[in-house]
Length: 131
Length: 249
Picture (tube, helix red, strand yellow):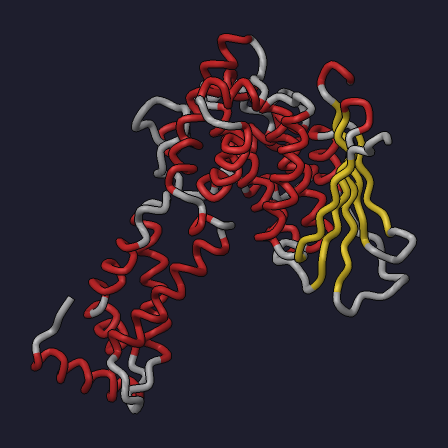
């Protein structure tokens, strides 16, 4: 049976739990042979995107993260579910500065509203030799 | 800290007066009389990787709140009440910085050691080392390396007076500031993209620009500016957190 290399994590939507989102990501990045430079960039990128969903102080709710490793790259998707949020809530907005920052940190990223109405992001970072 | 019976009586009288008058001069006197308590409590948190001066500041804020909120009618000594408030303030301070209170000292030490290893290995290999390479050099597991880097997150937000991991011993971040800087770039360009960036200290603006606009890696920035890569990491993380907070205001 082929194993699908995928990790899922659900954390409260508050800053102190984003630590777990980062540790999981850096653990997988290390497994993929990312350099220290890349690991540190990944950490910054996750913060930038997660905080875009939950705001700098966090919200009541959860962030669900899905980590996948297709072909030596790390792909992360995050979706926030807040108490009292409803379908039709606006998509998370990235400032021009955030876009500039993320463009330098990862190979690809996006923020959007998922089908279920959750504010979401995805990012992709490949190993240097795959880029 | 202890007061004799006469001093205690005097303080009780002042608290009763202050409860009535809210006189700022009395308030100052009451605060000053208990600064020793704030410092004593700050000291008890000083083995957690934060400079004592910062902690005394935090404890003083707690003391201030305690003086303002203390109700002398209640059958509790001020020192008991204030201890509770000050310790609460100190704990909140650490909690706001992440999980620093729970980050074991061993991890903080490993973080500092890794700073030096990152520098030396990068030089030796001519590229940024991988996590397994760092683990092998430090003779710890990969998990411990990752945990230490994460524990360093709290340390990243520490005061400018804290030593910078991987830099020369005893060299503090403050001594790097204000130096003539080859990497300094046009401030107006940055300001155009975000007025928020312009509010950061010049060195942090430079690092931000080199990383996100010029596309240099963290290690390239470190060698260009002559500081450790962990220092660059730490400044970037802090700048981004500041920018996010400022953008929400």
